[in-house]
Amino acid sequence: MPVRVNLELRAGDAPKTVHRRDVIIVIDVLRCTSTIITALTNGAQAVIPAETLKEAREIRKMNPTYLLAGERRGLKPRGFDLGNSPLEFTREKVEGRHIILTTTSGTRALKRSEGARWVLVGALLNARSAAHEALRLAKDERLNITLLTSGRKGEFSLEDFICAGAIAEELKRMNGTKFSDAATAANLTYLTAKDELLNTVQGGEHAQYLTAIGLKGDVEFCCQLNQYEAVPICRNGIIELHEP
Ligand code: MLT
Image (tube, rainbow, N blue to C red):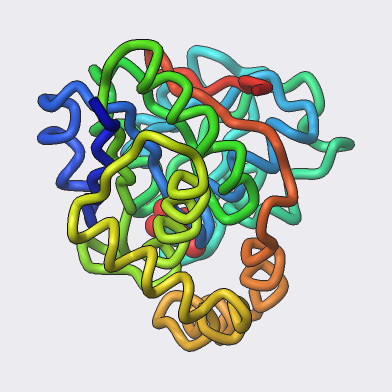
């Protein structure tokens, strides 16, 4: 039986993918999942996603050595150690540390995926490795795959859709998958955009917003394809590195 590759477009769609028992790849290119992958690649011990500022601050109160990171409207909340820019998560700052992370959509998608058997963290930065790992798990355990794009404030997100298409392209190159129409559409969009990835993403609403608040460098960084091999896995509310 081929592995079916589904696509869901918003954080709020997570519960139905959990219900289907799919291997989920949560995607938030700008910037949550790109930041998580970067932090763990640079030696962070774990990332703990929190849905609200209150929840994040409470976890910190109980764990004073943990770093508190995240954004609202793209900016670092008051009293936080780090924002949500992957460029801030250098080895010097994060090596060996636990990081509590709360973002507008990405950590919401991760939290709402809790209960799934496998929740992988994907972005353009690790598209190839995420595809390989998801397919390996799906085949081993006879499960299907859902590419879950976090979206932007509950709406469709161009860069996440393109990233889902990039991961789909890697899946297509391996044997044994069949795509939903939504996954096929994402793949076709990626194939159209792939030679102009940065330009295409820069045309999206969130990239334009980040650029307007001085974070163009983040958009450029997050548009690098297959820079990292790390495939973080979220289990029991904690995200840790999983080297394929
Ligand atoms: C989110 O989770 O909504 C994003 O990561 C927002 C951002 O760019 O910081």
